[in-house]
Image (cartoon, rainbow, N blue to C red):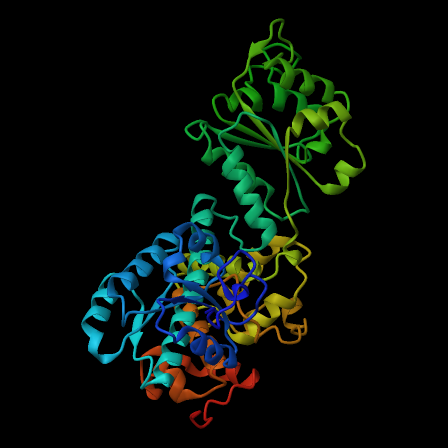
Length: 484
């Protein structure tokens, strides 16, 4: 006779991925509780799939692990099978929690399974509320693990590329490309608005590649008078013209074995562009006044504004030769909460340089950082943070410490209460975790404390004044009565 579990409930590639609630997989050992448990969990807002233990394949679990929040399995009739589920779950994803249903008579087997890596075990009959709490804790643990994993990836990328911190999609994609092309010899053209960090990209490419031990030479084509730019770039020989009293290597040869960064390359005079094109093609340079070319060993990274590229200030063949790889830096106003991650890093550096202690930005100051449009991009942010550090008298940057242009910018609606996705020191991770649990249990402090593993006094202490205010703005009832 066919059980109540239908094929549509079974684990599959589309069984859970389009759902929105906590995603639970029940591994059925034939004890007859799976369908009832599924109905109970779905009534509480969970999305549930059932898979027979006998048919559970490691490959199928691996395919579905990314979409799961928790696995539930019964240990009462098959202790070895329960431990097998734990092993398969951890093989698919080490952070995937497994909750065991264990009647009192098999607690010893359940304890062994926990030692093997299960998240928790509860009685499936006498303590339904304990099961729901265990699942809530497992889901919260799983989601915090994902958040920490994303943070760890961001920190690792940021450690490899200081000055290019960011969790926004555009920056994460840029950092991945940097890792892939850093060891290449291909020329790179970086475009972006002034102040977005184009030189930081060039330095990251240099540090991450095989030329890291060589020199990094930066030359701004717009900062040098056109009549001097040729000798600064290509070099000169003594006597090439009346005031040429000595040889000059030029930036191309000074960067030998390393990287030359040409900033504002669109300012290169038209008569010099064919000469640079030949240098890039032939890997040789003819210094001013010389009769013979000199071989080069240098990687060229250049930068230009988007408008310069669009207006074709560079001749087309040089443009493509400079930009074998082309990277575009997004403006800071399009990077969302990256501004907070950058501001936190800058605050630490400037506070240390000033001999001050700073614990971050107040909620109101954070709202101003998020609302301002940053026409000067990362460079402007850095000067604003340095200004705030110079003015502040406390351990936290307040609105009155910010430059007037930020103080006069109205905070965006809901900005201060929005989840902070960019700046996440460990105390902030814990605070967000607590707030997420409170929201999940609709502000019930007793249930939240049980999920988190501490009493209500500790809950209030860990929330702190700012977190309590944020929770209040989100409508969380910290004094709500316990739900039955």
